[in-house]
Structures are given as C-alpha cells and as structure tokens.
Length: 305
Ligand code: HEM
Ligand SMILES: CC(C)=CCC/C(C)=C/CC/C(C)=C/COP(=O)(O)OP(=O)(O)O
Image (cartoon, rainbow, N blue to C red; front, side, top):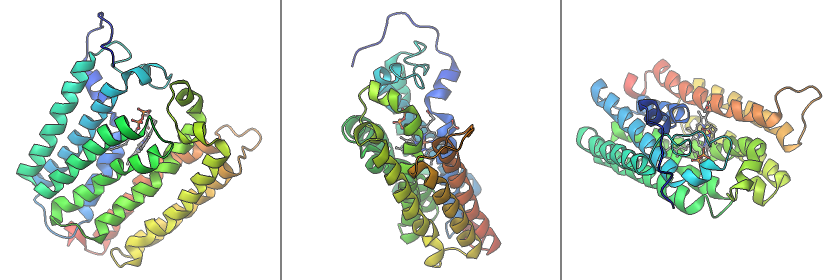
C-alpha cells in the first residue's frame, strides 16, 4: 500500500459520514434494530438505543477500514473513484484512525452498556468485514461474497442477543436469511458493473466463472432463501403474518431471478432484470424484517409482550 498524494482538498465532515457507507448501512442498522425488537424479553429503551447505535458505529467503522485498505482498488473503479480517499479529500491514515476509533468505541460501549456477548459478536463482525472479507477473501476467491457475506448477517443476531444475552435458534435463522440473501443481492449488481471489477483484478463471480454460471447461482440462492426465510415461522418462532409475508416476498424474489437466470431483457425494457433484482433485494430485506417486527407486535411477542 502506498500513501496517497501530498496535496489534498480539505476533508469535510460529510466525507467522514460517507466513509461509513450510510446508504448501505441503513439496512444493516435496520436489521439490527428489528432483531432487537423481535427478541423475547425486556430491554430498557435507552439501552436498546445504545445497542443499535453501537451496531451503527461498528458497521461504519468497518466500512471506513474497508475503504482505507481498498483505496487503490476504489480509485480504479468508476463507481467508487469519488470516495473520500481516492477522491483526494481524505488522508488514508485518517480513514484508518477513524475506522479503528469507531470500531473500538462501538465494542467497548456495547460491552459496558448492553452485553459482552453482543459486544463479542459485534467485534467478530467488524473483523470479519474489515479483515476476513476485505483483506483476505475479496482479492482471492470468487466465493468472497458467499463466505465474506456472513459479516453483514450478524447485526440482527447482535440486536437479538442484546436483549436475550443468549444464542438460540431464532437469531441463527436471522443470520442465515441475510447469509443466503447476500449472493443474489451482490451478484445481480456485479453483473452490470462487472467490467469494473475485472479492471482492478477482483475475482468476482461473473469475472471468474462467467455470466452464465453466476446467473444460475443467483437463482439457486434465491430458491434456497425461501425455506430459510420461512423457517422462523415453521419452527413456531413467529406467527402467520410473518410467514405469509416471507413466502410472498421470497416467491417474488425467485420470480425476479428467473429472467436473470434466463438472461431475458424484454424489448424496450428500461430496467434490466439484474438491476430490477438488485433493487428488489434491498426492498426484500427491509420488508421481511419489518414484517418480523409487525408480526411480533400483532401477536404480543418479543419486546411487545
Ligand atoms: C459481501 C456482502 C455485500 C456486498 C459485496 C455488497 C455490495 C453492495 C454494493 C457494491 C452496492 C452498491 C452501492 C454502493 O456502491 O455502495 C450495494 C448496495 C446496497 N447494499 Fe449491499 N453488499 C453486501 C451486503 C449487504 C448487506 C449485508 C446489506 C444489508 C443488510 C446491504 C445493503 C445494501 C443496500 C441497502 C444497498 C443500496 C444502497 C443505495 O441505495 O445506494 N448489502 N451493496
Ligand atoms: C456490524 C458490522 C461490522 C456489519 C458489517 C456489515 C456489512 C459487512 C455489510 C456489507 C456491506 C457492504 C457495503 C459490502 C460492500 O462490499 P465491498 O466493500 O466489497 O464493496 P465496494 O466494492 O463498494 O467497496
């Protein structure tokens, strides 16, 4: 890694905000909040707020460390070239220090104010994203998303454990939902930005195994996602409201994966099937976790009991 140029534009506070990838992390934080609200037990609202704040700080800190490490790669891709470090608005070391400070503070605060088990899992997820995924897996294997995607699956588990202080089947299932959701979420996007990843030598699935294989794998994960998303209902962990929403959303996810797998863009189709699937993937997770909380509220379960 090289230290970047000597001349910098001044760093604005907004650059620090954008370093935390706020748009992506909004869903990470939302799933963490929903895990917390769906968990059985009582949590003082202030402690609950601190727990979600810690998830936000940890996720943002890990995102900053990801950009500290990947500044050269980001500089080579159109989508990421304008980020604070490659854009010349932030010193690499500032991003590193900011990322470390946020990460350490988030784990410490979670441990002291909420739960040391939740803090330990938060620490694991930060290391998983910033080190295991970013430094180790991403530049090495096309399975980077599959294995590394686990990092983004921890937040609802952390939220749940902040309430229960215990690892049970439900938080593991919430982890599994995001774990199986991540490959179609990201590969749909990678199909329309793949030339960029190839340019900077990142072995994303479409670059290494080709488009056809990636398209087949997208639908395979979409199909697997249906029973996993419905599992909290099958095991009696939720009511039928969640079950029905999970089935409907997952069927829609499969339906939108079909044209991606068959590589079919209708004539005059302004939005390519991959783009549509990517956009729906974000809506899917927001709606699924919202349904989980709504279900617990309707049936008087979780923190609503
Ligand atoms: C290894 C796993 C993942 C990869 C590689 C990935 C990659 C990406 C990329 C490249 C984008 C395009 C926007 C951008 O450049 O920031 C994106 C968007 C997004 N991702 Fe992911 N993602 C992953 C996991 C997740 C997880 C776990 C969540 C949340 C639970 C998530 C939520 C989002 C959201 C909400 C957007 C849309 C942001 C917007 O509207 O601009 N992603 N993702
Ligand atoms: C609590 C905690 C630590 C949560 C972590 C959440 C997490 C791992 C989210 C993954 C989100 C994400 C932006 C991946 C992008 O991959 P990338 O960095 O390869 O994408 P890029 O090409 O945009 O840099």
